[in-house]
Length: 106
Image 1 (cartoon, rainbow, N blue to C red):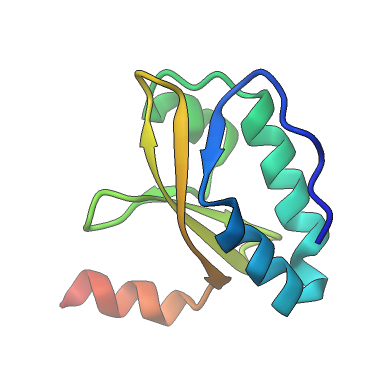
Image 2: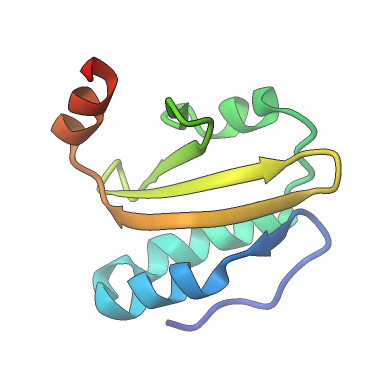
């Protein structure tokens, strides 16, 4: 997976997680690269900034912000430190709605 050069917005940590998934699931590469480009161009100061751009993003039970990308086919779970502008990528995968519902019920 080729990643575009980093811009002046948010800083990303955990890029290996994004790259590894993009390599394993090649059909996701364009979607992940688009998300990456949007994030590094962004200057988010709060969750409201994210919700304004990503209507399907949500806050998980453990406090991670989860982005649904690729028309909801993939998820990117992150932790974000708004005060220093850092997005930590924790997990990337194929989104299964039933998995989220099971986590919310349990």
